[in-house]
Amino acid sequence: MAEINLHGRDFLKLLDFTTEEIEYLLDLAADLKQKKKNGELTEIYKGKNVALIFEKTSTRTRCSFEVAAHDLGMGSTYLNPTDSQIGKKESIADTARVLASMYDGIEYRGFDQEIVETIAKYSKVPVWNGLTNEFHPTQMLADLLTIREHFGHLKGINFVYMGDARYNTGNSLMVACAKMGMNFTACTNKKYYPSQELIDTCQEIAKTTGATLTFTEDVMAATKGADVISTDIWVSMGEPDDVWEERIKDLMPYRVDKKVMDNAGSQAVFMHCLPSFHDLNTGIGKQIKEKYGLNEMEVTDEVFESPASIVFQEAENRMHTIKAVMYATI
Ligand code: CP
Ligand code: NVA
Image (cartoon, rainbow, N blue to C red):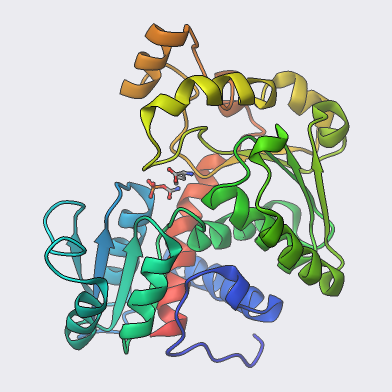
């Protein structure tokens, strides 16, 4: 493993890390995953504790941080979206200083990226971004590890993202591909392309890694020969319900269906950070069916349940990669 030391570093967005540092975290995650499968203990942080702040709901990220913390021998405290004083009775800066005096690391999931950056500024212990409106960096490590496990490498992989490419997941995937020398395509209605500022930043990175970035509304041209087809829900946490109608209209042409996967080719896999609206077994799925008559949204159930779908391997890797982040930075 490369001589890289990330102790004391925050993990706020992939833009803050070099290609080599990201590779180091992926190697560490793969090693920790193997150790877990072998039943080997990794309780190197016995006696330490982490605080997990969630201003938005979560299944994977919360469980990954809790299991990973316990596997590393640490205690964890979960602060839910309603019970803490954060932002309501106590400022972010004060909260950060209080928590940093008791804990050895702080995870934050919530709204603006600026909030997690502020926590990091006022905290003397590492701070980890568990999802903001702009970025979802721990998800990226899981996605990269999953792609590497499947294809054996990252460089040169043709990665196509369909749907809302201007929110946390789409933004972060563009950064991840740029950093790792992959070919990123955002295939969506141009209203949903990432911001020009972030595209420019990623184009600069791409020049040094050999990555390419493409933005197109042409589904068949974009997905031909793709190795990975990826998407995310069309309306993210924190967005108002009244955007559903417009989103459905704008993004329906960019749903991942069998035609898209067949066009990509037999090598193609399907990825999704989850949760996903691929059937009617969710409350929101049922409401959308009643209002708009749709049985599935960003991905068809047929693709989600097909052998090409590696979404549950991707979800498992959330835990191993989050463990690597805590292991490396505490
Ligand atoms: N992918 C992801 O972040 O899932 P959760 O919202 O369940 O944490
Ligand atoms: N874009 C989604 C990701 C969920 C993991 C959201 O922010 O709700």
